[in-house]
Image 1 (cartoon, rainbow, N blue to C red):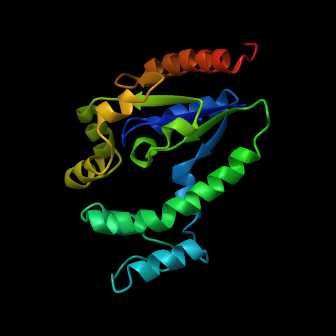
Image 2 (spheres, helix red, strand yellow; image 1 turned 45 degrees about the vertical axis):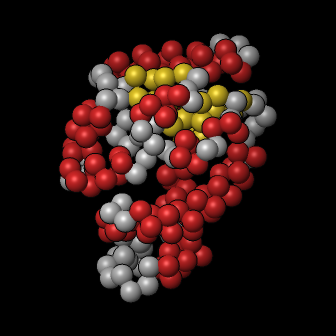
Length: 202
């Protein structure tokens, strides 16, 4: 097995790369998806988050699920609140990711899709690091197209490692400033490189 960390700033298109790698046969573990799972209704994670932010109104929908947008507005405007949230969620995500990684086939190309790789200082625990990169304005435009307000987008970008820090740990960079067709070609090149690294016949 080769363990590859796939990272990139918000709006870089990392999820698009992740989906394309999964379609080619990679075993993908998605940290963002796990972060949603560990705070689903009825989980200890959700209970811990609500207890941490007790007294803050509007953090749950009527069905009891977490209002992630409301929580995001809260924590990305307050670094202390963000650290409190991360102290709850990150260990839960890490434990679940470790379970899934351990369950992957021994000959897998295992891709851990993790936005906060550099921030957590965990890049050395993987065989290779792939960074999906795009210019700041490109990322802002994509976030606006997803309905995220400019101030919220800027705050979320500021809460992550800057572009230079991510690129400094990269073994491979996927440039995603172009079209989806450009991205398809870039992922095809990346997949060939992953196969080469893993010594798997093409």
